[in-house]
Amino acid sequence: MFKRKLEALNYHTPDNVNVKDEKQFKSLIVWLEDQKVRFYKIEDREFLRNTESDDWNKAFLTYIQDLSCPYNPADRSAVLDWLLGYAVKLEYGDSVDKYKSMSADKFTEEQKKEAISKSTNPLDALDFEGPDFKAGVASLAQLLKVPPHTDHKEVLKAICLLIKEKFNKDEMDKAGKSYDGKIECIPLDKTDLGFDAGDNVNNEAAKILRLLHIKELRDLQNRINQAIVEVQAMTANPKTDQRLGKVGR
Image 1 (cartoon, rainbow, N blue to C red):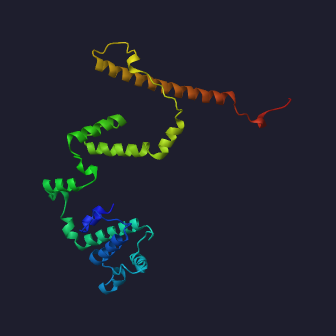
Image 2: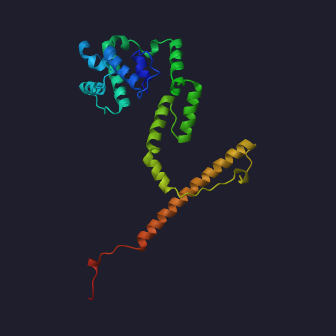
Image 3: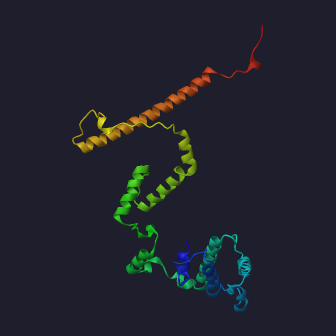
């Protein structure tokens, strides 16, 4: 989880950092202060450099308190991640003009391919402008009934918003509560189409469309029946106001 920040800081072993290893952790903290953060004067870093001291944890606690680290010192992973982010921020601040000039379009194709090959993130290997990616977005949009657009990236944004809205935990819980557990399986080979579409592939597709249409009609009929029941319940048990009633003449 620290690899990319360590690589950005040019740490000598970004792949082999184990927070649970006391020696590695202490060594990394000292390296960050000496090389990147430099919060203390050189002569004031001795208490932190003395990693063999029994009081090192106290020194470390004082250090992160002086840096105003917002995380619990006991959570070393969170503290280290914050420290690395802080160091990256300082590194950028020292060379703003240098990093501003490093835009993505200035990298050569070889440099881009090399960066992708080193990355462990599978998304980095995707070609977002390739025909396969565009076809995948179009298929997903059709499945989720998202309207088409000339820019496939805009379609992808719409798909993300739809998934975030419709497939979050609350919506899934509601769907689970409304589900009655009954699944009706209709064998496709035993479904009568009623006409011949010309070949087996078209016949199978037509059967599927017919079954989907029947399902939509059943859902609509169920909603109509539910509305009728609710209306009947209201009319069969009307509320009366006894104050308006009269007794005798």
